[in-house]
Length: 120
Image 1 (cartoon, rainbow, N blue to C red):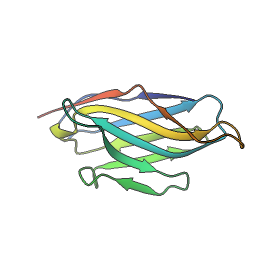
Image 2 (image 1 turned 120 degrees about the vertical axis):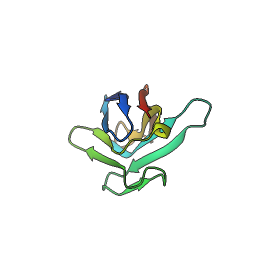
Image 3 (image 1 turned 30 degrees about the vertical axis):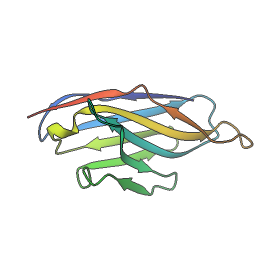
Image 4 (image 1 turned 180 degrees about the vertical axis):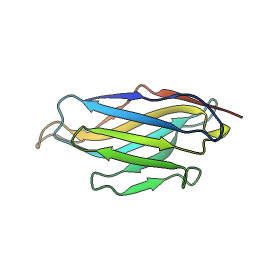
């Protein structure tokens, strides 16, 4: 299963961006879907996650500003980012666990990453 991200870019502080992550390939089910980010010189951190049932979880640093959502029919999930701050600057990665068939085990897949830069 391949994950393809889009929507990153350059934005001024206070602005908004929407990231997308589309999964393709042999998919029986996907659960959960997660956005991570990694700033220069820092460890990768979890930003937000959403289960197949729609339950969400956010890092404290983005609560109230970011919204994660998913379209199960399209195997695509999104990260709507608002009130962006310079400290949100990072490469954002999507990740998911999937099964290719009913009998297979869950495997992990990562997107290639998309750069988000927020200027002050």
